[in-house]
Length: 261
Image (cartoon, rainbow, N blue to C red; front, side, top):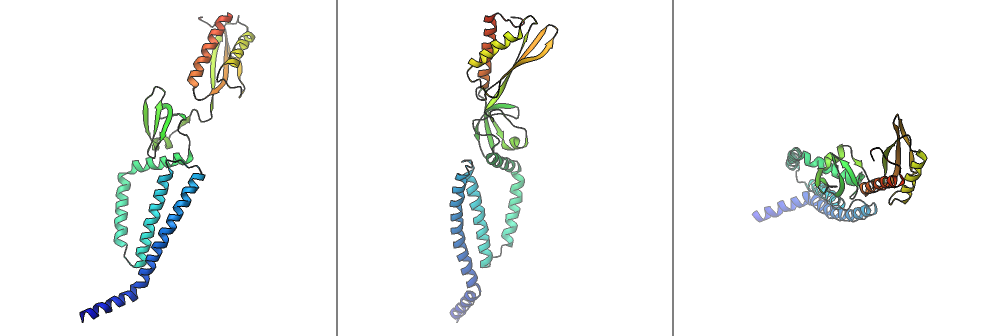
């Protein structure tokens, strides 16, 4: 008798819940297949869009995980499993995690924005948070800057996304400004000729944009000459020192002396 009752209940459950259960299983199978197909498409699309390689795996993993969780929840709802307790538990855990990891999540979001918007790249020279140096790595949560005196500085990405960043080498070239003072007895045309010759022979001194050599100010005891020349951003300091040394030596050898020389 008990066996018959069991079979009757099982039969009624199959009639009542069977279609929903079968539909839920089918949706899960088809859903997982669609997510797998979407994963392959997203991966190829990110490669075509040249999204940063350090960001691609994370975005794929995050997207696929979220879709799978949503699919499982939808499947459980269709099957008839009540999700009220699970939803409340997930919500409570989410709030607690959000409060505990607010700073970390901010750094993460900033890292994603930096990798997507690319205000600077690895190898760029930047000035940020009072630190000037070369970007050696861009991570999800932080960026590493190696200063010109070889200090390794780790900067949280939230600081970089919310503050001013000067990308020193982002344009490929920088303008070198040199100001020199001469007495009124020295002919400016001769000064301009000598400096112009130096710039024509200087390594890494660019022909374009156009160079400028002119009188920047006139004073009672002399005048000042401003030299503007564009050079490669990388190696700026080395080129600056080399050009200034050549100007000084050429002025000495020509007999045109700077004050104090």
